[in-house]
Length: 220
Image 1 (cartoon, rainbow, N blue to C red):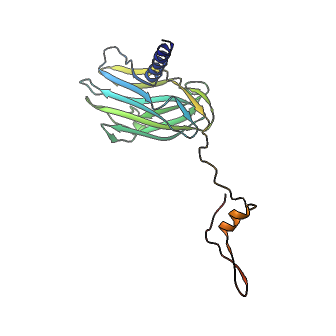
Image 2: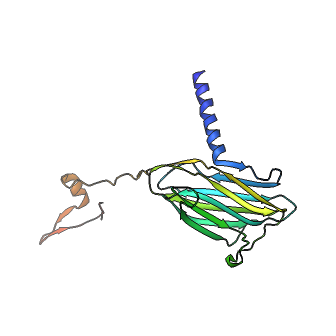
């Protein structure tokens, strides 16, 4: 009975963690037929792993959405290595800003990915038509061991005469040290005469001594 309760508790905790890392977010104003999702590929990683943050925006309305951008706040120990935005599966250009330290949250770098901008000088115009699906994938690495929060991310747009937005806190990410799992190479003990003879057999020539190396072994 105790084992059953313990397994149930572990399963419940795992489901909570998955739900916090992969969630459909509340969109405002209420009733807007738009789906916004936020997901992480992991909440525990090593310094050799990559954290993948995926954001999606699906316009299920009958009207276009303009001014769309995503924003996020990452610890200063994080390094963004790639960032890709697609619309209906095709890669599109965006205007990205950041890292801007402390701009939104103290101690964190703020990033923005602007798909459509009302500012003419930014020259970024991509209206999200009815039925369009937008995806942002950000890959991050961290070389410092620790526990890090993802404090705030937002999705913002404008449609049907009203602002549209969704914002939420992310999960907590635990970063551990990457362990070296490569076994050490075998080391030949040259003090072992039998091993030495096997490696370099010595042959007597009538005139001179010759050493023949049958196998070349690199140590180290």
